[in-house]
Image 1 (cartoon, one colour):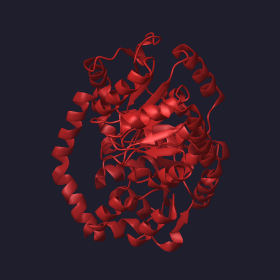
Image 2 (cartoon, rainbow, N blue to C red):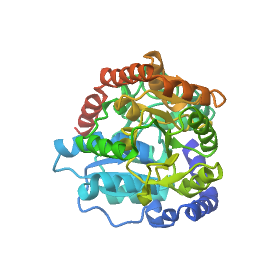
Image 3 (cartoon, rainbow, N blue to C red):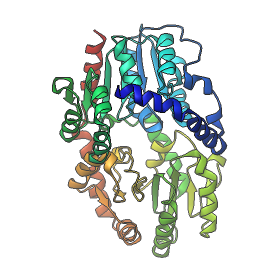
Image 4 (cartoon, rainbow, N blue to C red):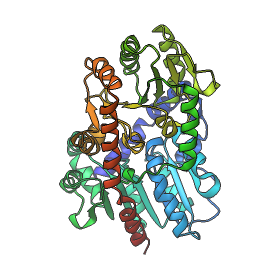
Length: 418
């Protein structure tokens, strides 16, 4: 009954869903393309009966990449279907895998759309990355005797409280997971409280610790850093609306102490690139845009307005700030910065990555900072090279000591395939 009411509500809200899609397509035109896929209408893949991986957007797609690569190596005869919800996620999947996987948008969680998708793809197993839990997606897949794995699963206390408000629906869905691979013991306990069977749960750690920097990325970072010159460089990665103004003010304060300092500013969403560029100029700071290959020798801010280069841009910096944390967004993954051995600053909102932040902070690699304290903290840290070196070394050590989740997750997926 709970799922019937949920589905009925979704059908009633469909006009608003389409209006939201139209609004998003006004800001980001790619949203108006391939709309039929979102309702389960697309040409079926040439081969069915393989692995379906659902990764909502860029971050989840990147997190899923090592799992997909390993699966392609270990099961060369089985196809892989990868779904996303956003155009940026779609672009990232195609850039990473090309024709090696079949990619479409995930269907809206309407019963008919999900049924059409499943009939076309006929997966042998479904892996959902992190917290992208859709009731009809999970339940209809299980109704077809297809195992569903929630991988790299995290559940903040805040999200758990939200799920608890609709407990009849939550329990009906969470009890259907074949296996939940939780990032931490705290996550695991919250999943059990919300209906996941204890014997369907394993604490594997985060596969994001299994990040590996390719030699190509290291080489490009060295070349790009050479172009930036011998000056202090910090990066603000995956920023959201409301953060850029704070970060640019902090950078202005840094440039008073170190006039040649450079900020690499990377907004989270491509539709904000132009507005952030305008804000930089409004602040009276000189700007170069990465997408235009503009000269950076004398500028104050380099706008990282390209896709797929963030990991390499981290390698050009002396210090990293992780966005989504000065506003109530719960932060973003700081492990890419840690893998480069960078000292890390975040804002106070980190509930999406609380366990990772805790480990980095306890190791002395990460400093949580309020918006008002950010300028002073930034200036102090950029002046203290030895402290940055200690923090960076600690960050690298945290990454190295937590590797292994990928192997555990691959084992879970292989067992579900039978």
